[in-house]
Image (cartoon, rainbow, N blue to C red; front, side):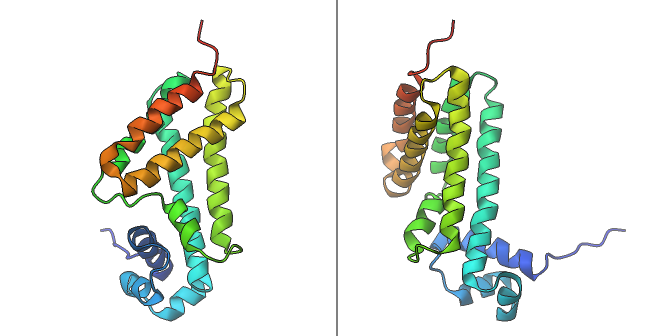
Length: 192
């Protein structure tokens, strides 16, 4: 006989905040977060020190999940670095097409968190650095002459596609970004 245990207050707060901040932004009120999690205000302060701590932890957890998704997408595309990089843009097109797509969580957080010293900004910066490094590593495998800046360029295309996907989804921003990504990738020498 197995006993099903319900997640504790900390996990319920994280789950509710991850969903609600994506759907409504980081400006969502504490009362809505508490109601969504079904917890008392005390739990928020006990586990996270307040809303800022909760938002930061949600960004950290989301970043780890999203970094893993980038790796999974590329790994599923095989071994060829060109194919792996372009698969990222194909996957972004699929994500943008989903009914519940609301744009980039990290860009939205950066724009909404007015305090430049909010700890969430450090999380979003680190996330972007990790993704850029992941892309740059693939470009380096191709022999790209400037993999670091190339990774930054690809990340800029990803950010732009996600932003445009939220504001102008009918323009197929992922396809446009993929076309530009091909130009960045093409700077690498052709395979023998």
